[in-house]
Length: 456
Image (cartoon, rainbow, N blue to C red; front, side, top):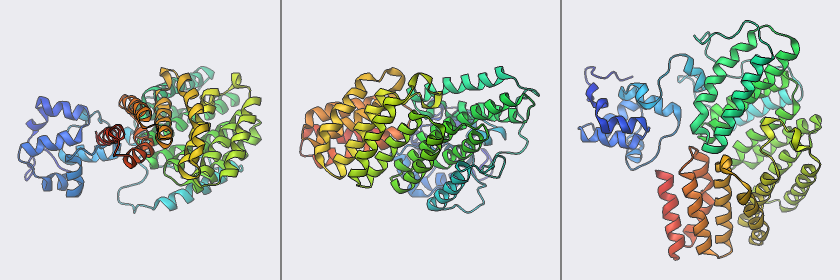
């Protein structure tokens, strides 16, 4: 690590006190930080050496590439000697738990394929009933100094965890995972201690479920800002706790969310395996709503794989299961899947089919997406942004370029209000379609707008 003012360091402590630099640090605008350092005579080579990056990475950041990964921000701050608090990164040993470090830096990095296979084996063991709670499936920091948890817990303590999770989930839906992830994992680092407290059996069982859902949310917010390894760690712990709390609907929900990670990574085969495990738990739970969620997402996976018949069968089953579900009794983690989200999923799946199998599916995608967009409130801004992007894509596919471009601009404008790397990723299909039509001024302007948004 670099130490400011140490021999050989080209950066003095006063560098970080300049008003323009402080503003760039507070906004985690690494490209601006690097440009300001260059002005003071610090070379790209020196920045690369201090941050452990290649000169090409430094060059890309100087050109505007955004740095969002928490661990990379920490490495940059420490390497340059930036006081962590200036970047909102201040933490001690405890926060190593909060940022969900997945392994020691000295250990070799496993391939994504190996990680997926290991997680699938773990998920299968939990889903079919193996007692794995407490096994070495994560990397929690030993004996952190934390706010003391109660020695004995009651239902009030559990309700407080549940209330915090509800509030944080609402922030995630409205503003994106980057807005609240640190708060989620901070809550976890305290709530995790409660597992060692004494209490009545039914209280401890409900605590397991409450903490499972908090890990579930930590995984989802990590995924939303591109921290796949952290997401996997949290989902793995969530599975163990949900199984210990005997909540099959939550097990199904966790597996659905991990499957969504793989869909996002364009690995529908792996996603389908997660969804199939989730379907076992959903059917055992007797929850039609849990089954509907899994069926809708299986349809998405099959659409990505080009299996149109299987896709349509699962969409039909989604509608059927949802029609029989008692949504008034839905648990917090699955309440999002209402009639609006059913329309959104139908529209999303038909959009994939329109792009990969048959363009005529736009006639099914457009009305479904339009219904979802009209029904989403301000509390579901991220979902609305996703659906606006998909709707714009369909209009471009139909040749209605000016209308598609208008809707696409709305998607970008909404994305700019969210702290979510997924929003940028979900704009890629729209960008591809806009680039295919660059001879049209509206399409060209939309492509340039999305490109600028992606590097902002």
